[in-house]
Length: 439
Ligand code: DAH
Image 1 (cartoon, protein in one colour):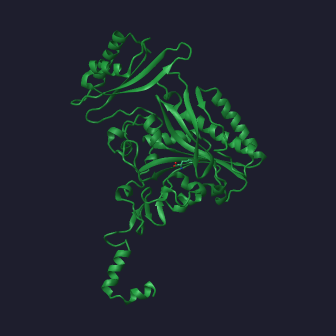
Image 2 (image 1 turned 60 degrees about the vertical axis):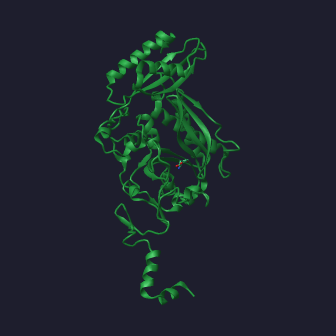
Image 3 (image 1 turned 90 degrees about the horizontal axis):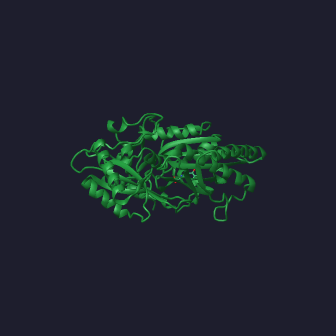
């Protein structure tokens, strides 16, 4: 007996309850309204109203929001790339996963990891979801910035909505393409050779990070090299002399072999920023099946994807990812288009960071000795102390350290002048007690 026959035989009121349980778009479960359109619910629906409220905010399109400032900086770096924005976040699981070669059992597909509107539609989890459609339009040098959504832990650097930028460049898989890559590699290599940058590289192609069988081995090497040169040059634009604690120190960029279902070879890029290695982006040579799906034959492409919040938090010293969503003028008024500035916390009792960098005495200086000295001098005005850099000069063998002291009163707002006075006393005591030489 089929379900239809069974249903028609049920008394009317029972039929209604069956319907109520089956169909989620009832008054108690209204359809999901997103960007002015209604979508039916089903058992897969897990999008919440807190998330729905965020869709369409497009923070990265505001030119004087930190995310917008960073987005523009990256777009102007890739000046001849077509920079796309405003693409709605509603995609099919096929766009987000299948088209990019994600296996059927990939954990990202699960309802615990991603937001589903219903079984056929979801909120994109990454900007790579648009690769096929953009390639299909014939774009050869493009960027796409967008909001992306992932169910994740809650902490200062994770938020269920964040922003990514995807970039890709397509070359013809022939002698013309080869000449184009070679010329661009030459130009970028010269630029990097003139710049204050140290790159820790990995071989472009290895048995654990192979090229694709159908690719010409020489062209695959050249394209992977072009990807690395292009992104090293982006790292210079973004971090240049902002990364080091001491002026004039080179920017350090490190390449690591990685794995993504939609690229091979694949890499991650890290930057040494104020004493720590920070993961910046993922990238690789696009799997040929993605270009085939897009109907782009006889071509080879690289692509990258980066998280805007992660980079903006570092560049603007924004301590908590929730601040990006703040509509408090004390946040928004601090930023202006085209400028990377340091965020000044405006909490009731704001923190005040002061750095001290010095050469160690021959007898050395333990971190705890430094902390005790700070505590003796500043009392409870010190909230925390972080070692942000240590360095040994290769020739003289002298070592130096740089600490960041966070002065923050527990019971009043500490002015910058008061913090400066305490910090000056810390430096005096440091010299007197341990005989260190300030850098
Ligand atoms: N989509 C990846 C993510 O969200 C990032 C990424 C990696 C993008 C490699 C790419 C790529 O285009 O080639 O983690």
